[in-house]
Image 1 (cartoon, rainbow, N blue to C red):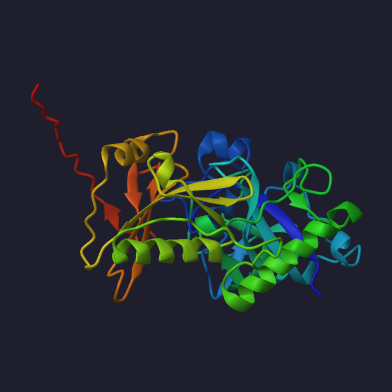
Image 2: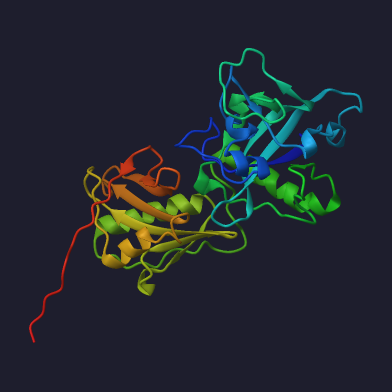
Length: 329
């Protein structure tokens, strides 16, 4: 069984370079001041491998002897490196991806003749790494699948970004992380919770297309490890709440019988959709061709672009419609 090493980095959607469409959040003082960091390329393949960076204490070494390496070893192969980041919506730390069968270097290294460049430069470093792994043995979770919360403090990550998880208090979470990773490798989704039956949304939809849309959205998020609650009757401006630990997503569901993606929001739904306090956790879930060949589009707000995009990169065009209520006394 491979030892686990946890490395905390800034939050990104892709980690394939930093630009206006894919910025980094969190990750420490350097990232806050410059808007970039060494981890921005952690999931950008180079010659069939990923090269991962984590900010160590004062740019020092990784103590690979705590993972089983010899005291004088320069590197240790056969490690599962779990990447974590602070969620921008909840503030909690969660697992964002992993490298399996990784080689962890004691000291920072740089790739010669690397054809990619960034604006990142910390103590003369540019696009270097501590950890490398075959691209086929690595996985970056989509943002909404990052549901495994990582403990902080006793039994969890401390002030350092590198956590060896070799204490007795970390045993339970290490096993939880192993189970999560193994389930994802085997099924493409996290393990189902056994603490009780999954909460199903109790929605009364008149149209079959809406029922099909709700069912598909519900299945999508329960497969990701969320518990669902229907809040449609509460008139809050969205249909479902999907909860996983500290993360709670607000899901507005729209079903369409055709392939053209055009939906309308009620005034109450539109207020929630445009509320800046909800944007980080609000999802507009549109199911096209719901009764024949359903396809789910999940639109989330990209704060750096100030636009709504789905996972396919489609841009949502918002056209406000003016209406009025007329009455006679």
